[in-house]
Length: 396
Image (cartoon, rainbow, N blue to C red):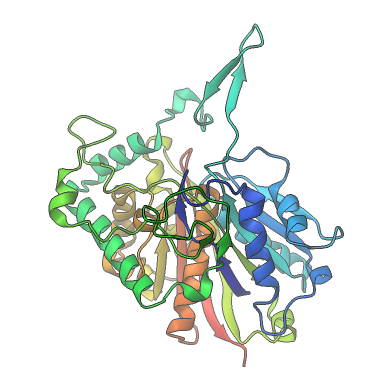
């Protein structure tokens, strides 16, 4: 059962959080979670820290962040890499550990500091470095498209028009702006203190260059006319633009997950039960459809359809793939991502799946309905997708 969830503000890469490495982004979230359940969690009571990360330098950032957060050396940590799905898969793994071991208390989620990610290189025969931007995800015989090219492939295969993509992206920004304006995100955000040399006038998230308290991605200046002016980025004559694609972001998100019995001992008032999870593989050329494949299998295994689900969060890496997946599942786009998504807030790779769960817990608590179902979904590089089905439950 997920009984607490927190996240940092999501800020554009090389922006307000550019000086914070991954473990320093995540540590404040872990500290906040320790006191966020009602009675609080004794540091030594944490069973393990399970964290997703996609482009870091290795070295087990989960362990590093746990110690940075002040957890005792007796608390271990493990880092999960399923690229964009890493944060959600870390929560999935923790839920399975709870199921296998009973009453453990886990901190699980994801983190990404794209700004401080190490440079990567292959070694040439003469020992010199051959730098590359991203890892190879599948054998070239399977096709290994860049994310934007794959988004164009999905748009073409599933008939997702430029007009629909632009309208969906604009809606994401407007929803995120509206949510921020009324304080919807306040309860889940962990403010960060940074040494930032950026101009606070240019960075709405910065307060005197020190405190970062809000997401900096949603743009009030966007309208339909401006969206229509963005040119295709990845394919001549294509439909995927900078306007209907996410931007790279730095950020972290994590949850407390434990058994129902232990949740009551911790005086949690409610939470989200993990009812089932699935990860599916799809054609790497159409990697954006992976979330729908996972969700279809998951819902079928539970004897459910999408119509049974009340809350839906999908990682909006691209409007094309989001719409294609929602169409395939029979989910009306207006019923997903109630407070906007990654098109407005940004995509912090390994953290994004955990952001989805953080948002779902907040939404479930905002309009609490016993037994209401929630679905988190994310498509993953290499042609995969992970989905998690959750159910709201009161404990008191």
